[in-house]
Image (cartoon, rainbow, N blue to C red; front, side):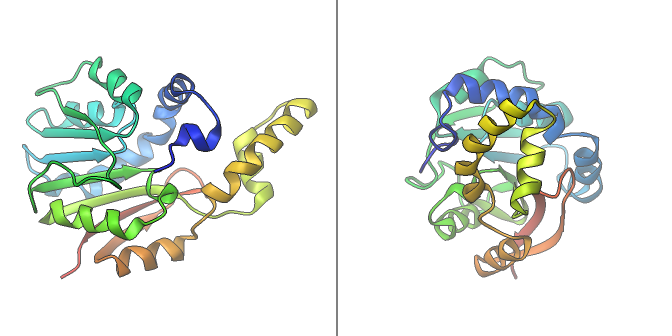
Length: 225
């Protein structure tokens, strides 16, 4: 699979720094209110949690604080991400952290054993999301939740304005040229596209909401009956 570094033409370290800096924005108060209302009550005290594409491990760390009895696993295709995640301090048991490409190999996890599987800004870059969804369904328990957070399509000027922010004209022109390559990747799917793809892949979508921006949507999914 193509990595975010390859798509954005940045180094592992640059992407790690970006993800660390933006973590509080991506997992803000609105996200955790949503999580507590619709997910937390059904997990129990010792859930099995997997984060596919865990990056530098900050979401796993946050989940460990909330569920110190949880069994946590994080996977990422980039060794530098896993290395960073392994240096974090976790509450409760340290997570299992693996360099792993879900498009190439099955997750080293038992069938129907996962209570919560998260995937943030990964599925949109994959050429064959169906195969990955099959693997998620394999490990998801009968009552488990798949939480997908990913990019959704927006108009080009809106996308550029949000990604660039308030900068001088020269910096804005440079950023626009750089971001044009990312626009097609980030704007591959509409919300309706995601809903259709997830249903066709065997999930029931309990709810979906754009929590923090019009460019990103959170989908709460379960195994279809």
